[in-house]
Every structure is written in C-alpha cells, then in structure tokens.
Image (cartoon, rainbow, N blue to C red):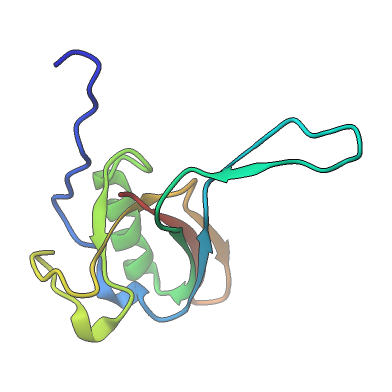
Length: 129
C-alpha cells in the first residue's frame, strides 16, 4: 500500500565484545501542549512502552576498533538496524535467539579518543520498535 512504512528488519548482531560497560536510559515519548498563561502545560503519552537507549564506552585495541568501524559501515551508520544483547550470557552471533535481544540502531556518530596503545570508543544505541 502506498504510504506505509515497512517494519525494520535486522540482518546481523553486534559483536558481544562491546557489552562490557554501558548506561541504559528509558524515555516515554510525550506530546506537550504549548502551555497556559499560568505556566502549566498538559502532556500526553504517545506510546504504550518506554523507549530504551544505551551509551557504550570501551577501550579497544586497534584491531577491535577496525572491527567496530567495519560493523558501523555495514550498518551504514544509523540507517540499518541490528540486534544487540546487553547481557553477554544471552548473546547469539546469528541474532536468532530472542531472549534478551533488542532491535536497535546507532544513534549518531561513532567516536574515539586516542590513548597510548588503545582507543576509547564511545557510541550510542537506540531501540527500534
């Protein structure tokens, strides 16, 4: 049907070596009114569940950094979704194991800080429903 958007489909899973240090946040999408004269406003929830996001940071060797960069290129940055397992015990490299799996995409750019012998990588993931 014209005008319909197809659901996101993942074809790969993010390497488990990046599931070491991350911060998880949850947000409820809201629609706020423009506000009243006395400063109050009304808010309406736009979803039935919260949207999760993760900030990941890790020290990587040069070889690990190259592998992460290749994975980022395979996903065309933030364009293609992939599966991510925050819990290493649930990790499946094929992405077929559904327990603990999230359909995500990169949120923004991949960045690194150079250090002696290793690079500090930092990236953000956001859940797709």
